Image (tube, rainbow, N blue to C red; front, side):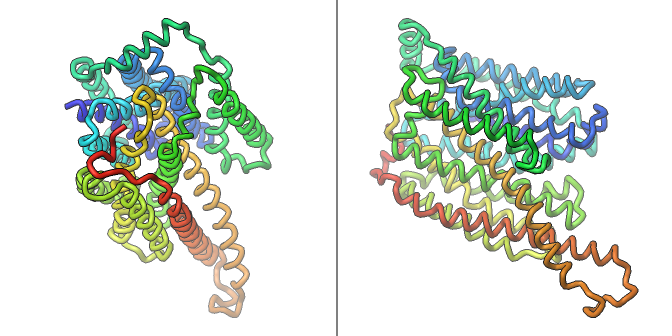
Length: 491
């Protein structure tokens, strides 16, 4: 019951990272915002989410994990209502910032609850249920958002969070218990005097806030040719370097970077960055390809992801059973990374004649490996860590996934524009009066053909690069420690 209850809010929060994307045009029209202004509806959520994620472990320790979690769920639910009733862009942005703050604190707290609530032999199965929400919600979001927007209105994209949030608050209050070790740690922390890491908090806000805006706006604002983007890059780099140095020497760091010194945890964090990079970027790529090049509407394009989500739902419990019991976690992770790399390389052979089911099969081949990647990573990352550090470890672990997603989306967006321009120039060089078009052939259809071919070639380039990235990363997995069967998930 605890696993189900905690996963409810996870699903709601992860769903909101993608559900508003397909409704953005309708929201912008209702709030009288132009296209450039409307993107801040997405950016504002991601920025506040990115700021809260790294400090959520510290906040959970100070406030109390259960209390902090319920505050986050309540804030997320209330701000969802504010989003639904927004009458102006400024009101919507304020509501989305609050929503991001609430959502940013939920996922790390939930994952540490799983680590502390379940005994080692059942932890992988618990993370399998948690993994269902994290992996399936991004796929369901575009489909549900498109359906609600097309059949009702964009307001329901946010209103559906209300019953889920209220149910989660009620059940968490009744069923979830704060572990005694965390209560003792909190009392000891407060008894010795709370040494608030003010500089660390400031560096987190500046570093991760500027980084998220930098990644989200890089392509829209023409990269480093923009003074705004260049300034954000300098602020982010300086703040994050300063944060690392400062937190390594502070006695009560707001972000416990020292945890990355545990070999298993550090490697798993790096691999979780890769998971976010590949999962979120391809979640954007395939529907975008279907809409821009194949003429699919938002709902049909989203369905190409939903089919893959069904395959993930089926395999997630299987991965939970075999992790640590039948197969060493690191071999499952290696298999999954190699399989993901292969699926990305296979996707680089698509063309404009593909059908709906061909795209869906491509998505299935990409996400079918995720259960055997996500669950072993989520479970093994806590091996060797002190039990009283689970809150801070969860914060860093989830930060890596979200940061990987942000970097991945920015990377594929930038590469898509650059490679499309590159292929357009190369193809256009060969369009002459002597290669079949004739002297009087209209230029517009010819240019449209060249643009379509250049676009699809750029998508294929990106899939090839993502596959290569996965394969290059694979050898790092061999550095993960081998653990005895049956005790693979124990501290």
